[in-house]
Length: 519
Image (cartoon, rainbow, N blue to C red; front, side, top):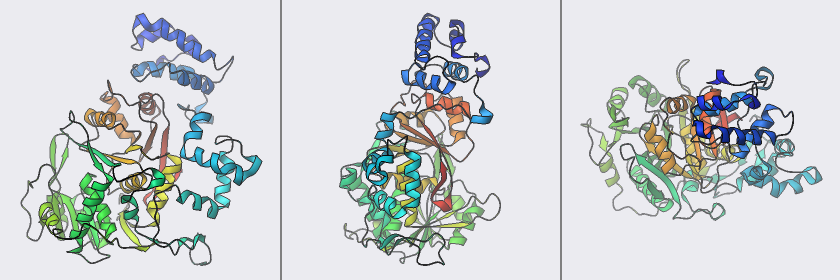
């Protein structure tokens, strides 16, 4: 449809609007509203100014055919020089919206005293404030830490110490002691998080017409403590313990319990073949592995436990993908989830977390291994703080947000999303099933998701299946994407279903615990 774009928005005719799938009876009124919005940009306005005016006026709505969005977008930007200026923008920050973001409120509160009369507003002064944050890291990071649910048992002696010249880049939070999993599980008045706050919202595939499930912070903490108590009966502090399963509520509970108890998570993606599982188990020297009997995807049962058995001789704790009973026969020495939880019976519901230095190892992740053997990438307790601070600033994760990003704890986005929610006071949204179709898209609507992440191939699948038709995604206020190169038209389709909200491109690496650029 892009080929049908006119030389400018003024050249679009009623017939073009009708050909784009809009009702002929309403084409005239739509065209009048479009031209009125475009005129508000002023005579001779450039394409970006015209599009900003059209988007602000709400002339294009999520329920309109994609072909109509294409017609207007590509006509408005017909003269845009992509080679010189990059892709034509979909979204423009308003002064009002910018002041309501985390960074905007932070800059409004601190900008005048830190920058003096040079501070104007969050948009005008952004580059100046960024420069200040780089040149005054002690000041900036001491303030940012107060925005997160980070509770130190022993406060850091300094934010950044450069006294040890052998450590390139210095030592962050020197002397700090904490348990980062405990930080995720405690009420936090500054974030308006209480025991009754919803920590996780989820739905099982196949239950798409049922209400979504909710778990409070208190319930999450109780279940994490149960698992931590059971772990204490089987392992020694510091033992590496693997997780190879979809990112379900149970996977999140296990992840937090391992770290709460002073063990180390070994993250393995549930898509790996037996040899790849075995390699990662061997490199990490994992003592055991949590897994599922099957993976449920699109109504099909994909074997998982059998791959784990082929790849590793380590003890496996096996969780049923559905119901209370396993669909597989266990190998000698392996254990069902039910029997594992029974080991916590009679133990106290009050748990003493293992407090460690901020540079203590908590998670072993891996590079993809596509160019050779996978490389083990250690995460310390600093890593969650880094990723939560970055998403606070760049994706604008706020308290009471509902954040959904279909991923896996075996990939870096899994831990990033987990910590971004729990250290920022947001709710983690999980869909136990395939994210490729309409059922997942309906979950996004029903859960009231406000932040939605994806990879471009997912967006392409949703677009090809017209999966959002008839659904309301307008509660979404920020979109994120990573992993692959984005397509301009697919992103146009995606953002149009949210009434043109921003899409943040995240480019990073597992070793960074975040991104080297978010734009």
